[in-house]
Image (cartoon, rainbow, N blue to C red; front, side, top):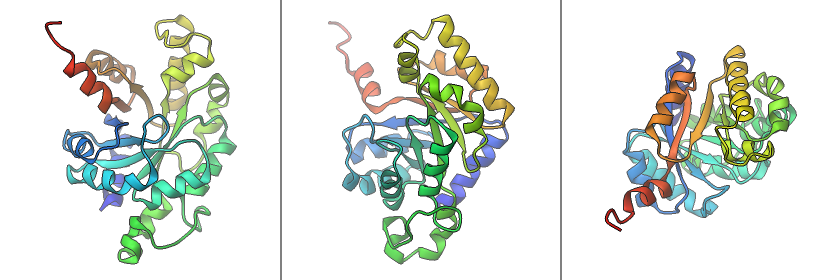
Length: 252
């Protein structure tokens, strides 16, 4: 059951063990199946920048779960309706872009959890097999996995408050948006960016919240460096980039 895998993931992170997942942007269940069997703890289906619709989620989630990975969803934006749709479709958790305050994160957590924990609407859905597994789903409905993306200087300035919100499982840096908000888009070697990243991980450690980064290009050296730096919740590349990097004509 998904709740047991979520508990195992939380325990893993609490023990400071690294969790690595990946990202899906192409709306195809065969890709989901391949990624699900590729040894990642979780696969985040990207509804913010991917071309994926709500009605496609159940098939993608089923395929991801075949290989033992947890299906997560990066929702389009931090609004209650997107949380409900993804979770009712069977997502084990949500990655929330552009979180900028503790109040905003609390709103998202409330919108993601059934009462009494939150205020998400209770009902039959694909997540509980349309009522067939209603009782079994009660625990997961109270505690889906919640990841807040830190993607702006405004979010960074509010990070201590964000990290103290009950129900937050991890934070993940959105490196492109964060650097863009600093006026240094994609310049990840800039001293200001490096300093900000170091401050984010140090604050996360202070409040015992796992800190992650999205290693967008499939760079295993950078992934290993991030692990050495103390990041424990890492997304490694995307389906599209895996395909792009491996399909370029080698003799062109």
